[in-house]
Length: 67
Image (tube, rainbow, N blue to C red; front, side, top):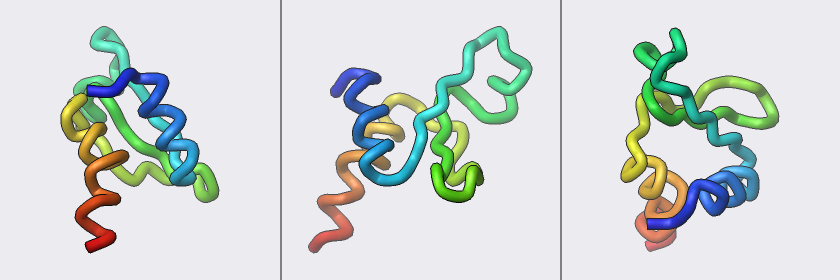
């Protein structure tokens, strides 16, 4: 599994921002540990992402969509 800084860089290259919610945050229950926000529109494109889901969305989804 890649580091969080690698996730952030990959998200930025895709026009996204990785958001990490702290467990004691009010948003954590609603949005989960990680979310992705579109940089151009500011809209939330994915929420409630686990570390594995972030890895898949940012790295592995490119492999499956290019086939």
